[in-house]
Length: 89
Image (cartoon, rainbow, N blue to C red; front, side):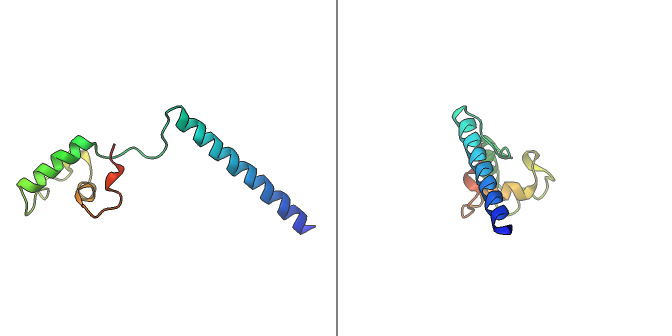
């Protein structure tokens, strides 16, 4: 009996997952993009890169929130080895 209930639950779960994927695909086709918006634009990243190269030793140490984001966010976007670097909008 438990195996039968487990099989039914697994089937229902697969239907839910399939419906969710179809919904996401349909939303993307309509131009909707999910996820959290990028914290910095490409323009801001470029300005931060210029500031960083101009003031090499400590470019953002005096500003508590450069570009309206945390200092760590700025450095994360400037790090060339960062796998998340391409996530700017």
